[in-house]
Length: 384
Image 1 (cartoon, rainbow, N blue to C red):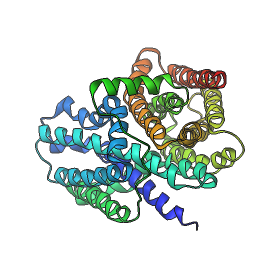
Image 2: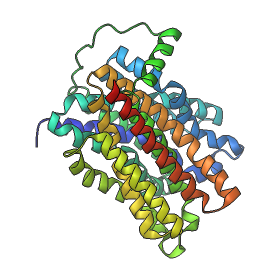
Image 3: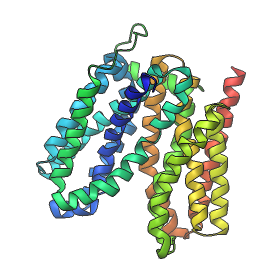
Image 4: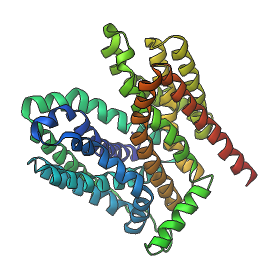
C-alpha cells in the first residue's frame, strides 16, 4: 500500500466522525422525547441546528480554516467535537444541549472543509480521484453505521453511552492524526477576517465558475438524497421496504467506489457528475411509470453514487491551490447543508398536496436543474 493511503483513510475516518455528529441524533430522534418530555417541537432543532450553522457559516469556515491552517483546524475541530460529545453524554437541560449542538456545528464545518483539502494535497495525481471518491462516501457510511450499530447500542447501553463512544472516537482520531499530518505550505498572506472580507470572499466564490461548480451540483444532490430516502418508504411494498431502504445507501456507495472510480480515470469529474444527474433524472421517469418500483429505487441509488464521489473529485480538478480548494469545500458545505435542510420539508409538502407523483416530478426536476447548471458553468469556463 502506498504510504499516502493510511493517512487518507484516517482523514476519511475523521470525516465519519463529523457525519456522525448528524447521524447520532437522527437515529435516536424518537428516543429523545423520553429524555426531554417538555421538548415538543424544539427537539427538531437538535437535528437541524447543525445544518443551519453550515448554511450561514460554510464559507466563513473556509476562511477560518485557511487562516489557522488545515492541520490545526482539523485537529482543533476533532478535539472540540470530542469535548462536545462528552458534555452531551451527561444529558444537560434542553437549552444547554441546543447550545452544544450549535458549537458542534462549528466543529462539523471545520472538519468537512479541512479534511478533503488535506486529502487532495496529500494524494498523488493517480490517487486523487479515488481518494476523493472515498471521501464522498463519508456521510452515507456514517449513517449506515449509526443506524445498524449506534441505535441498537443506544437501546442497550443508553443514549449517554452513545455520545461517550462518539467522544472517544473523535479523540482517537485527533491523537492518531496529530503526529502524522504536515501543515500545508502557505499560500501567501491571508486577508484579515472582517465583514467586508467575508462579503468579498462570498462574491469571489459564487462568481467563479471554477470554485462554485462542485457546490452548485451538490445543492441539488443533497436536496434529493436525504429527502427521497425519508419520504419514499411508505410507498414501497412492506415486504421489500426494509430491504430496499437498507440497500439504497450501500448501492450508492458501491457504485461510487467501483464504476465511479473507473469513470474518473477516463473522463473529467464534472462529466461524471453530469452523467449521474442524467441517469438520476431517467430513474425518476422510471419511478413515474413504475411507482416505487424496487429496481428503479436501486438504480436511482446507483446513479446518485456517481454524483456523490465525483463532486468532491471535481474540487481539485477545477481548483489548483489549497486556498481555492478550501473555498470550494466551504461552498459545498454551505450548499449541502442548504439542500439537506430544504429537501425533506419541501418534498413532504409536495407529497401532502399532490401525492406520490410529486416525488418523481420534483426530484426529477432538481436533477435536470443540476445538469443544466453544470452545463452552463462548463460553458462559462470554456469561454473564459
